[in-house]
Image (cartoon, rainbow, N blue to C red; front, side, top):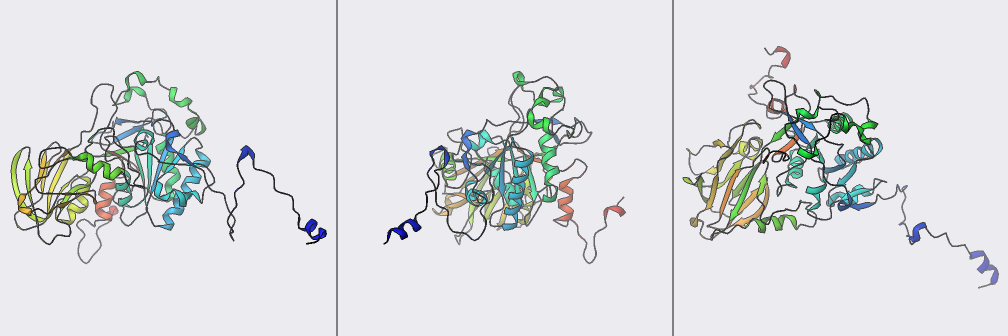
Length: 457
């Protein structure tokens, strides 16, 4: 090669990037790259802000008012999987939050982190340890149907405290979805500002030494930026607290084996499930806990006890123990009744029983129900499912002890815990009635449309 060719082919090397970082080669692409968002560890975020829930002053209302002691900072985004339209809406929402609420940190599930990372240019956080979610997340926003809300709540199935859930209805159903995505700016602003100037002495759950004088909370930068958009003491976001049930599992020898199930659930590479603080935490469900024969051709045989007393032996495809929220899910399909979510109760519903007289039972929420796998199952295991997800196989002699989760305060000055707080649209707009009429077509007459509200008395 000649000296002229060598000089002609010479090109100066590009400057080295700052901070001593090595230069990386970009793959060839026909589209313009926006740059990948930086993925950060959830452990670096500030500790969780636990809100208070105020008793409603409106006569006849059982809803609670949301009161933030300071602006929420850590937001978990939970989206419907394998839906491009929903994914684009999540990206749009994330960009809006980053632009208008820069103090808010966005957290995504591990399974969708890479796809969202490609479309954002600002840092996002990913849960990289099971214990982080319960200690860090202030509020959850869901994008999808009822299954997405259930998945968000199930991330805290090993914990007694669930952050408020702001749900956008973008799925097949919408019984648990409260908001249309077109209203995402209004929905988020109302939830974010809720309690920014609510009087402290109205709190149903005092914080003891953590109490602050009236007006002190308004000094936070996040609220100062939104000055003039506060909801006020009488316009705080309303919360529907959905009760859960919890289960403890005991083997034939009477040993608690909850840890076997919790370890299996939390060990999934992309489960995102919040780790438990207890050695053998109870398993919590917002819809139902079910035992089913699974793929076995023979029916399941289960002994049912109520408060320590033998109730019945059922031979069926399975058995359901449901919450009022779950009364419009699997239990309804199995012939169970519809129960309002604020009724403190649990339901026992058989799945295709070999009896015409086994009807669904509605019991007080504090009832202790025990499902014992009968020895008549001839050594085969049955499937234990929590909110539709299989957890483990239960063999003959295994007991599943179920009761309602405690909701409230353990003592003076303690934080409110228990239940799943769902942020609803407004107190005048009852989502439960709307779901019955709009989705379940309750008492829909044959051959004609039901009367509209304008003709109702």
